[in-house]
Image 1 (cartoon, rainbow over the protein chains, first blue to last red):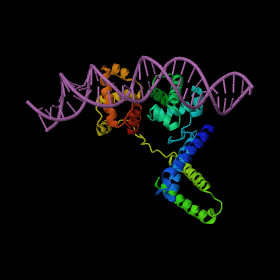
Image 2 (image 1 turned 180 degrees about the vertical axis):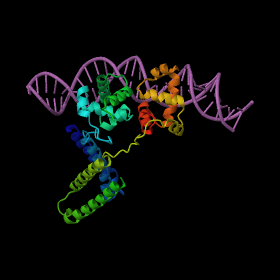
Image 3 (image 1 turned 135 degrees about the vertical axis):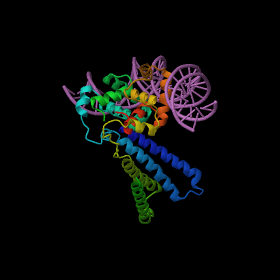
Image 4 (image 1 turned 45 degrees about the vertical axis):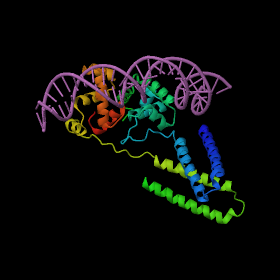
Length: 143
Length: 143
DNA sequence: GGGAGATTCACCCGAAAGTATGAGGGAAAA
DNA sequence: TTTTCCCTCATACTTTCGGGTGAATCTCCC
């Protein structure tokens, strides 16, 4: 959280610097005020989208697609000892995503996904992601 | 989606108008260029966050429910173009077996399994076995 | 304030998976 | 007979996975 805000500030700083740079290089020519403002708007919007996604990331991916009510989560999960994050990774695995894609989706690094994967494999006593998915379904923790 | 973009455009319009308004009312006094740009940045960031949240909001995934019992094999399979052998491989994949294990189970070589795997991936338009399994279930050709 | 667990990330390394290409044989259709 | 599709297998190469280790933060709880 703090890191995100810091990162945002940093990106803003870069943005401001970039703007100044553009100023010095091109403003004297034919960049109009409208274009300048538009550019700022676009960049800030992009940053905002990114920010929004990052800040609301801890939002449960859990309640995303379960169609019908599906919530033997708490009980089963604590039985098995799966943490929330591990479960999220497992769910995305079940959707057929690669580790890299999971990393992008959860805004974490590839290495972190691997760590979660290894841990949940241990807890589920499996060796491959496909087995993990299968086991997850059998245990009733995956749709 | 379209509505969101439209809404966004609308808000941008309002924003621009607001800016103009502020211009006429106060720019002549002590609003500096930096404050002006900053204001735009903040507003656009807010809009961006809102946009991001709206666009990535969990959407209802309408999964094709299997409903009826399970045997649309022939039909679906010929639709997709999966051969019998490829389907066998897919089924064993769904059980979480590795390529080597599938090879042993079917009494064929590892390379052959890989070939079947590649072919069925093409036909299902996926890149990974986990995706293939997922897609297979959605298509109703896997339990 | 310190411990426990969760989360994050990094590095290395070997194994498994997947891609691309070629090729031989069998069975059925043209 | 020729064509076509399927099954089989191989080699070589790239990418992804998974194991192992270590470590920095953070949060929650005692």
